[in-house]
Figure 1 (cartoon, helix red, strand yellow):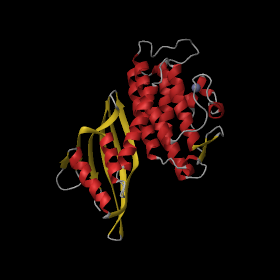
Figure 2 (tube, protein in one colour):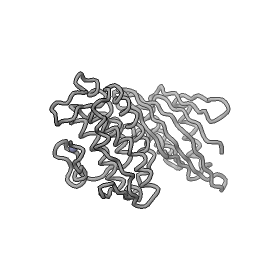
Figure 3 (cartoon, rainbow, N blue to C red):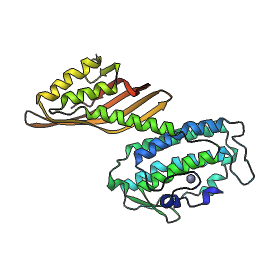
Figure 4 (cartoon, rainbow, N blue to C red):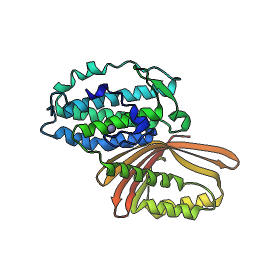
Length: 310
Ligand SMILES: [Zn+2]
């Protein structure tokens, strides 16, 4: 069975079979690629032969999917252990024993199961910081192989993508591209909220990433306040340029993007800090961004946010 191979060689050399590039991945990159592979897995498991082995010694798509589901299921706990302890040994997992039951699983059930556990793995990855100190933290598998967080991320993505190929599916590179572009749009949105003399440029950035007809809603007060783009951007640009808020900046703490076709939503925690009348101030909250694909690229069609009480 292919799962008994030690796939960690891929980290050093890349994978000659599927073209996976050598090296580690950040948790955010891994989350994007795991999510991007899910439509391919769903398609494969809808196939008429999803439960059929193409040859006696070759797994069926269902068996590959169940294996990948189990790897996704293991990921959150392994990642949490690596982030909480120094060089922990992972709890043992008998993958041969697990595999014995794979063949009898109904394709629809394993499809839903894989989607749920892959989403859980992606959420755990998105919640992990991508700093160098985190990427270099280590853990040890039952066979003694020591992996860094970056390597754990890369091995998971490789298994998700390589086995999708084994199962007769294709990895959509366009979904990964969409996720990357949306990350850039969201980053540009947050980066625009910074005080200083470049307020006009930042306002232009906001106009660039917001659909002209976008709706912006603050739910931070007692009743929701709804803005059109100009009504949202102009007063903020003017406050940020005024010098009233010194050193103001706002940034995303952690977030996730769900995407289908030409629509997407980005759900994230954010924080902000500034100095007002000589005193340091800070805030935090959640933002929900809705995005649509336009001829010019991904644009934010709606924003709603709520702040933590200060
Ligand atoms: Zn491969």
